Image (cartoon, rainbow, N blue to C red; front, side, top):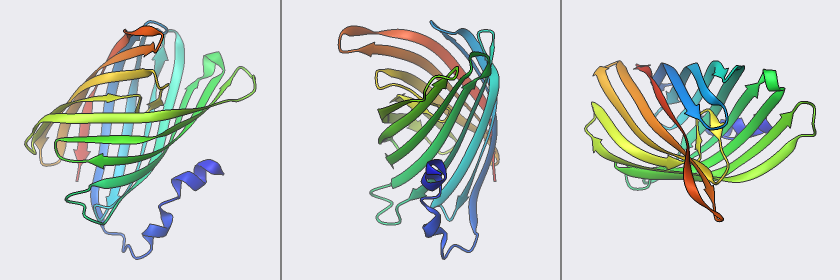
Length: 229
């Protein structure tokens, strides 16, 4: 019930919408990764988005693959609404997301709620919120962890047909990490046609805390194709 309430928070704003769709996206990706705990892992993903009047968006994604020798299933849902006030100067949006991460072979299931507020300008932006994570392992009592969620990005090239930039964050669409478990990413998106683009990101996973020097934990590449119309 809490998950449904969070995802339906923007529902009252739908009153007055006539169903005009301003954007649709459908994408497919591949994500190989190597880190110190699970060694080599990989997954294939499919994801989509629909946007109404450049203001209200809904999205979902599903990924399936393997971590070491264990099957893994990940999924997400989100709803996002942009502020209609002073959008050219203060591009504020509020997002509510639900993320599921499952390792059936380890009897591990993680449910994450992720409320966020973000500011997204052409050249830079940031998001801040909370990762509310519920973990159940092999029949043990559910472990609840409230964690600060943060993300910062900067584009050093943004010409419409191509975007390149960097970001630092402790969450993405398919995962919500601890405060001291974050990644540094180099991303790009190149539009091949008006309706098709290729996108990718090289991620370096970092870990550390106040008592230890930050160290590289893993590295991954996410690449795929996105269709929009």
